[in-house]
Length: 108
Image 1: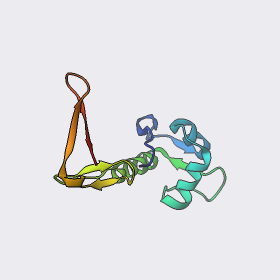
Image 2: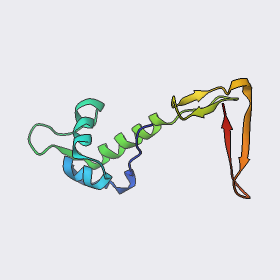
Image 3: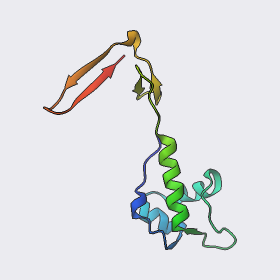
C-alpha cells in the first residue's frame, strides 16, 4: 500500500511550489515531481518553479487514498505479503483478544 499523506495540511486557496508541497506533506521533492510527471498531478509546468494549486493537490491526494483501499468479500482477509484480499486456507481464522474491547484476526 502506498504511503498516506495528510491532505488536511494542504490549503485549498494557496498555490504551492514543488518543494513547498514536499515540506507540507513530509515527503521528498522528487516524489512530488514524479507525481507531476507520471501519476497525473496537474501543475503549471510552463515556467520554473512548477506551480500546483491547493485544491488540485487535495483532489489528487484523495484519489490516491481511495485507490489504495480495497473491499473485502465475505470470507476474505487482507494479506500483508501480497497486499490484496485472500481467502484463508481452509476458511479458518483465529481471533486473539488483546484488550477488553479489541483483538486481532489471523489466518493462514
